[in-house]
Image (cartoon, rainbow, N blue to C red):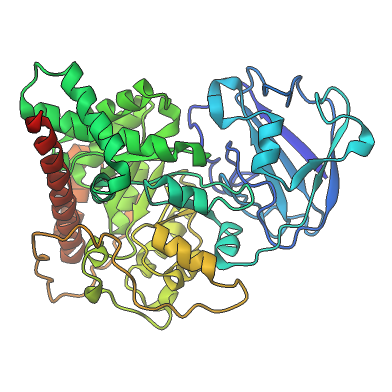
Length: 501
């Protein structure tokens, strides 16, 4: 069975945005992903006829059509079960999602020769004539792509994003043409890249650019602008390995200042655009404080997509979806475990026993009930066992560090994973502060959040919910403290270079 869906005109949601839950095709995304990432696909031949010319020519793609989703469904099961974004396939129907878009999408949408290089499992069936252009019925052969490791199995279940600004990590785990959807980042990741010897040229380039173009500004402003430009340069190095968006995080110093958060987000987007990454390929990570969630709503109205980060509770997630955020990123572990692994705790049954599992499962359940279009992307994951537990909770995405990707790729898909204790995610970035005191209280009970407007009166209901939840308040404050320290470390590096010249 072959179905072709095309939507003309501007896609206001942009790449990675889905249709709303519960409606027809529940989750379809326009991004070049993995046509055959699922396990156990049988070889088959599909026929494409009467598709807009030229669909795939030697040097171009579909002009002036923003979306074309070609969904090839094997009749294993007629039910289409939650097709997901970017790089995964539907199950159990074993559907493949091929997404193409107009030449406005630039290098994201390659010529067919490039497609064959990225997706060698897609080969022309030449018995039916030359493969291109597709003015008449053409045929592609989809070969077997067995899931031989846990990473492949996870990618067959949901969307995997890369929580790293290292292009080597993104390249290493681009498997058989299966690319990452998004790249996430934060101030700690930027600092860890900035201190790497192999990034010195990029670091100096950012410093030199600001020195040459903003010499009239005071040193503090030059330093802040250099850190922003460095963030963009680092993201751009990973951009070729993505089908979706690059993510950059607003300054933690602005977390409780709506106007400052808006200004920083707009500045980051303009820098990305000036460096060849269009706005629809950018998502701004914003801490889920009342003030910053209000900023998210305003930015979304401007067409700037946002992700609510430093998120530890259902009320924060509800406020984010009310603001129209593209993503929420509930932290599975508090941020400090990446710097102090000794505070990490292992659970026999991660999905049932980990204290954050019930938060994420509640968000998934409530979003489904209300038909939310906000996508759930758990973050702050330290072991492959945690990944498997999270997969069972059925979020939309997972963003994974290079260390976790390595563990998944090394583990055979048929075996259970018994992880060693997690390795420090940011071993080279020791913290200068101790964690906030942990209150001796249990988890706050989740109120009936579906009928609460968390945004009215400048986020008063969210502010009240946070005040009543000591553990979320502690984790949020500690995350902002750590990100602030990492940002300050990067600024020290930049300042030393700027003042030395």
